[in-house]
Length: 264
Image (cartoon, rainbow, N blue to C red; front, top):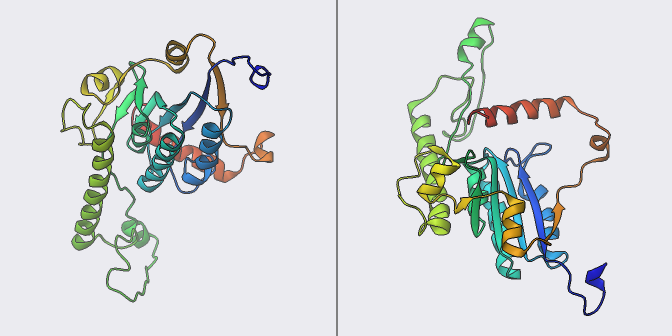
């Protein structure tokens, strides 16, 4: 109630936003512009926070959604002159590091996984399986490139070549983002290979600004009486009562696989 009483100074307020999970345009619980945008708006605009702290635990995902979320963070920070601090928990890799790079400062645990500045495309080829069960693939298109990289057909060298060009172009966009946000802090420009490091090494390479956890660091910055206000997406009614659908289970398996790539 203090902040509503005239002439009584209230404690500094730090808005805390957790960005956890795979970054994807769809999927229950996924990080994307639609799910994160309203949370960021509330965090930046309510109660005049002195700073916004991002708790990041993400193995990455969609480059477009990563860019949209990162741009939204920067837009709000610049508009309202509110500094942003990113705190890496288990992992901020690939798109997860893109989100961290939107902050003014990045802090990590000594054992956090950081980096993986690269682009990946993966899938399965099912040609042999179809042959074994006697299924014939039939597909008709208008436009010679309409059926590229079909998993039910043998790979075509031209399709693979075109995909690699697209991946390189996406990688260039990713590198431009990191270079624009942290170029003057990076110890080595050859960090865009897709390799990742633990927090202690990431600090030496300039990928993070220091090793610290959110609450003690924010208290060091804004005083012991700092008030932490946490913001997150509103859960659907059924999920509040623990209801789970098959789709949720599948998505959790996929998310688990993404984290497993980094030994987590």
